[in-house]
Image (tube, rainbow, N blue to C red):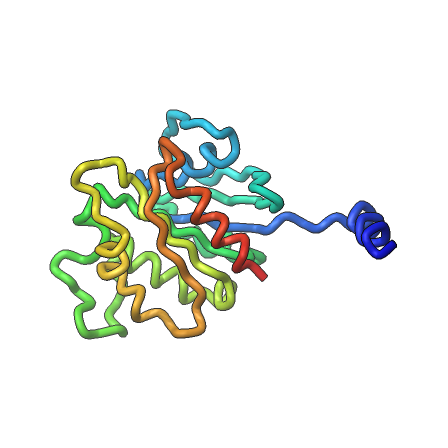
Length: 196
């Protein structure tokens, strides 16, 4: 009998989709991730000049994913997409090692260093400073693992200084290839389990 009322309640008051903001530097593969999840196939993506938004059914969850462009001039607008987000996905191009962290490491030993706006680490920490994402779980997608010279997830974690994140921040790094879909299921399964 209880199952009947639960189904009735759910049909009258359907659960709203989980809102996810997905960011990363230009050419990291955000749009490829989005459409691999949405369509189950790879698409030829052009640089995103604003944003793409899609509702994605993933296993028993429904996500509304906001894929926001990563060009430098667009990054300053990222914060407008954070409000109302239940989770954040940060996509890293692991084949472009020079852009994962400052070269040379401008922030070495100094957590209060001004953000360089050129590397994934600085942009990720800038994003995480938003009050709208304080309690949001963070999924880092270490993309382009199909490339021979791609940084492995462990190296990306070290370069991004994930160990410096506050202990109450829920995060997970997942190696993936947006073109083949490898690793995306595991990453978004973690995200679904950690969204409030």
